[in-house]
Image (cartoon, one colour):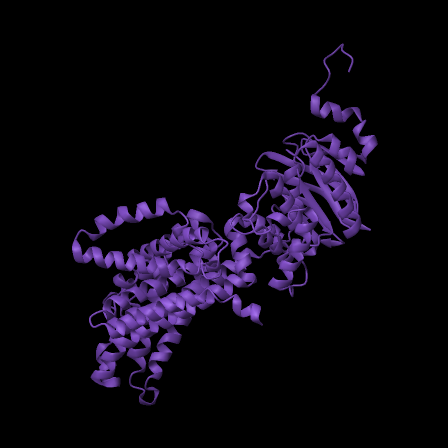
Length: 333
Length: 249
């Protein structure tokens, strides 16, 4: 039993980091927005890492799962707000709907695209993202290009105060929960057979097959897990926080690129990586926006290039090497 | 008992016939060397047996079961282990984890957990003499160590048939001799049929194999007991070409 708990030690630094972040957010006035943004980057980084980091496949259409998750929450609130007895239940249904819709989309995409490799997979997923957006806009599904605005329904159901609390506080607290769950799933996978299978297929897919690994099965498991978490992130960080959903915004490829940067910056396939990556990325972006407004991306891009060239294994990859053979080794994974 | 049976197996790549109407049988516990010059279709043959390629014609039968179109990940647990010509370790994983993968997925009972697999791995790593490197990343091993690790990984799959692709190439003659002794021992202890593919290390062929199959241009040229096969003049011809007219070999 003790051996089993030791396996989960690396969660300690992750949860401590989140706790500190959370405490800063609620105790230091004016910090909550920044903390919420960092939580968003950490959560989505961790969710994406389960797929990108563990399988080595780059999904350029990842934001689509956040997008459908956003719609899940939006649909729940806009359609169910009249059902009085549900109360807070519509938020829970919204989260569940987000989870289900994102995983269904990932099954559909994964069943086809995961048969492709490398660049072909990446290209196919860009197509899925754009295609899905234009399907919603063109076929006028879920409000078409006008999207869904549900701030009115939210206020109507819960009253002004609760509604505002939901979108300014609880939406962000949900993000912390999702991040914690994602971290747990990551280590649970890493320590289990799935983790071994994914490592093997990431390193050499053909050899993995010959070793008896059903690579498609494990890739799809990682894909669905990662997508479902993205759906939850979309439902809370976008739907619940902004109280509207607008197709060009939730299918913006820019967010996929941010996810990729966070994972690579922190260390792909590591547990701590996306957390470190999310914090470094979020803070640097915020700081640059403050000191050189308007030019942040121009300065940020070369910084990212330098970091990735200097630390190809990510920040955590370097730390892992540095602390090899010391007591800290147990915690840095 | 017949372990593996190939019947008229043909594999083409476009206009090139890499393996042409190959038929042979392998008995349980046999040790066989498949020899042939570069490009004679040995690796393609291995890929057909392990399921990386499906043949255009013919059948692959393992323990009486037709596995011609079975994907590789379902063949491995039946008892088909293999190593690669150029070792293919899972580089970022440790030696222990690499070998554990074999134990975890390469056996029929899906019940084998992570901890048990790691223990099995320890045993096979010790067997091939890599215990000192057990926690090293597989990518950082020397080529010979990588080969040994691959053998441990394949053995952890508890194969009935082990396909080795040039496992001895590039090794020091002393290591080859050691390896031959080791393989013989493992073969006896675990009752594994071992097929070793060799390009031209006759030293290993003579020391290890009971039977030799010589491949040439995708076809089976000779299938005979080792001593007989190696003295066959056609073997020399395959490697060195025809002696010029008027000379005596």
